[in-house]
Length: 107
Image (tube, rainbow, N blue to C red):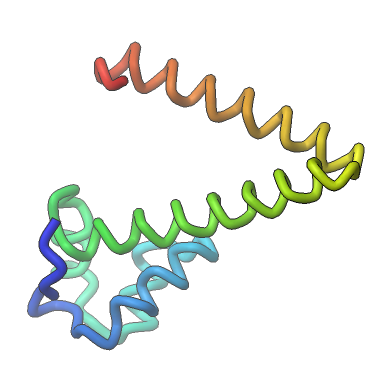
């Protein structure tokens, strides 16, 4: 994936895209926050190969990973509630992988 920015978003806005995506901001809210044309933004966001979409998805993934890693560390530390939560996370991730495999043939 190219790390170049589109004309739509500037290099200094990439981190903002990732952070707000991690907070589950919708693409519409993100376009408003960045003060860019919604139609152009959505066109680029809907292109799964675009730099914008890459950084949006990356922000979500990074937040998910950080939370799950913290949960894992707490579970390793003997926190029963976190161990139970981690088991649920593992099951949810397994289900998602199986779903992607069935729907899209992804491994």
